[in-house]
Image 1: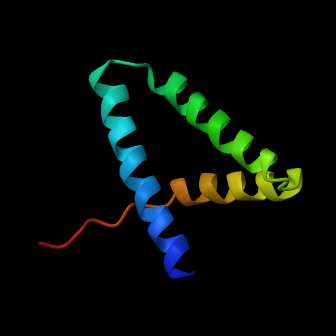
Image 2: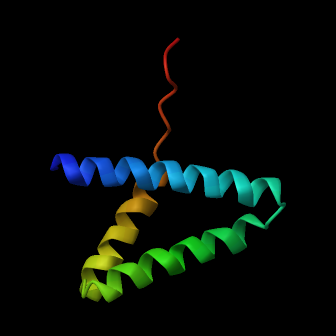
Image 3: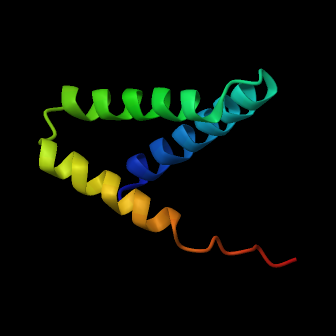
Length: 75
């Protein structure tokens, strides 16, 4: 991953963390904001001409990763 790509991922993480906090503070239903974020992500990839099978494979990878235990940071 290039430095630019890593920096963009960091920016996106910060923006999404703030958005998640706002959704929760405003009491938005988790299903609703989850679907809204999926819509934004898929639309961005489609507009970049990412092929459908690659988008679906990425979503499946995310689903599989979400079933794995999240590591707890050490103190």
